[in-house]
Image 1 (cartoon, rainbow, N blue to C red):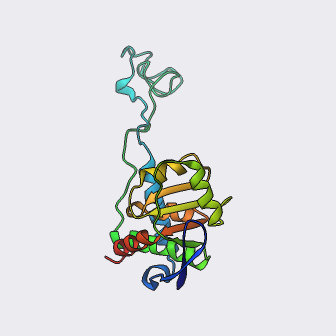
Image 2 (image 1 turned 180 degrees about the vertical axis):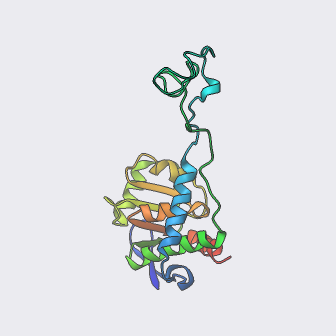
Image 3 (image 1 turned 60 degrees about the vertical axis):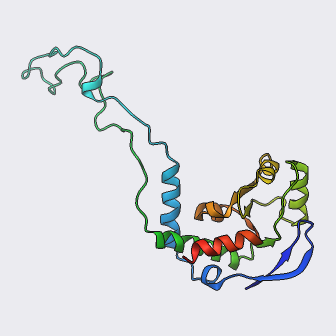
Length: 209
């Protein structure tokens, strides 16, 4: 699949790049995508929820009533979970929600996400660019020139570029990230994927290992 390379003014440079069929032309695997997105969202969870168990409640351990003959359930002391203000049974504890996912499955998921974007013609390739200083106005011009304004756009750069990142930080529905950090969730969450030429090489190197 050939895509024309644009400059930041939205004009064709006369060059074309061929998107690797081993990445952008694969048959998308929805289950691999589901697992990778599930892992990404699980890793975003803090996992710090905690409720007190019976041994952690502050209160007397005196037995409140007889073991039998009271006409109700045995409840023991005032910390019993059956009483108001008592402990919680099987409450949440701090935990890690992440799980193991094979590297090849993660790679297949990312290839599948990129393949979906290629099928939707939602990939724009632009030549490498940077700004001398952070300026939101400059980035808004780039968005308009590339005709992606009003869309949820993900700009993928070869590496971390502070000037570009800060220029885009306050623009709604626009994200900037390095190619090495590209993941399935971010690709699918965007309406259009704007890849620089340098980012294409890094994505290919990472996914064809």
